[in-house]
Amino acid sequence: AQSVTQLGSHVSVSEGALVLLRCNYSSSVPPYLFWYVQYPNQGLQLLLKYTSAATLVKGINGFEAEFKKSETSFHLTKPSAHMSDAAEYFCAVKQPYAGNMLTFGGGTRLMVKP
Amino acid sequence: NAGVTQTPKFQVLKTGQSMTLQCAQDMNHEYMSWYRQDPGMGLRLIHYSVGAGITDQGEVPNGYNVSRSTTEDFPLRLLSAAPSQTSVYFCASSSPGGAVYGYTFGSGTRLTVV
Image (cartoon, each protein chain N blue to C red):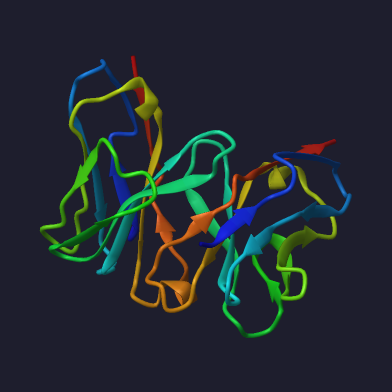
């Protein structure tokens, strides 16, 4: 069975600092990987996805993530945090050839200090 | 606007009451699913459907029923509400190639069972 671990349920950074949100997965084969963002009282919005093409994936709002098979990781980064980045971020995986079901990590709440 | 519409946005139930959470999408997506979101646990799959007339259980199906009579609608029924079902519920949909295009989420239903 696949699983997703997000290290750190809460991450706090200063405005302008690097954002690094960690995601590790366990899977028997390289899965499809996603990062979603949830702003307060809203649904989830897709930030970026890895679907076996380029290992460095660029998403919306300046975020990017790198798929590292050897480390089974898909960490999310942004060079310079903005106040508007404060939200909860979810990493998710989907097994190829296994329907459309997503497995989510526990989420990381990003706080940005002025 | 095209997307996934969930109603109601908020609901308070008494233990033992029943209710139906509505989900409708206008994108002609075949795949629809229900998740519940609880603090620190991410999103967990309750039930899903790969097309009209076809449903299956996810990770946490107990206490919930679903049916899919049309492509557009995928209601979630709580037969006898329990405090453990207090949560935020999200409906999501995707095309068969959901891994490529991502998933569209509704804005959620916040349910409290007292």
